[in-house]
Image (cartoon, rainbow, N blue to C red; front, side, top):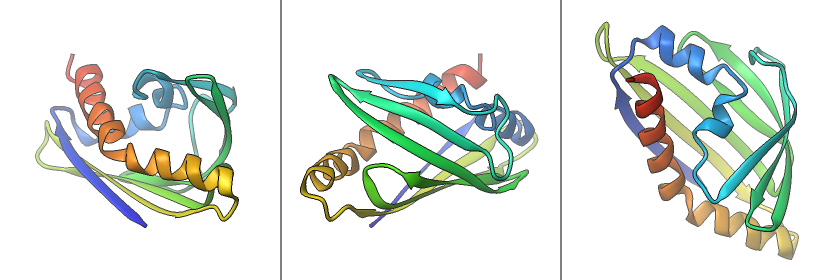
Length: 146
C-alpha cells in the first residue's frame, strides 16, 4: 500500500528540515486524540537514530520502534523496526519552491500485519491517513509560519 501527501509551507528548506529532524516534532504535529509518548530518542535525529515511542489511541497503546535512515538536507526515511505493520517506510521529502517556501512531500509504503489484531489496528490507522496528514500539514504550517 502506498499513501502520498504534500503541502507547502512559508518557510525556507533549512528551517523545515531542522524542524523535522527534532524528535519532539512528531508529538507536536500528531492530532488529538492520539497521544505520542516518546520513550527514547536523541533530540536531533540523524542517520541510524532510533525512536522508541508509544502511540496512545484512546486507551489502546501501540508500541513502535522506528529507525531513521537516508538522512539528507532534503529529507529522511523512518522505517518501522517493531510495530503494528508488517512493513512501514515513511519518506519525508522537502523541496524548495523558492527561498521562502518549501514543498513537504510524504510517501508511506506499508503492508498490513498478518496477525488479526494488528491487521485491524493497521487498517484503522491506514484509513485515518488523510486526516492525520491534513492535520500534520496544518500544524506544521502553524508552527513554522508563526
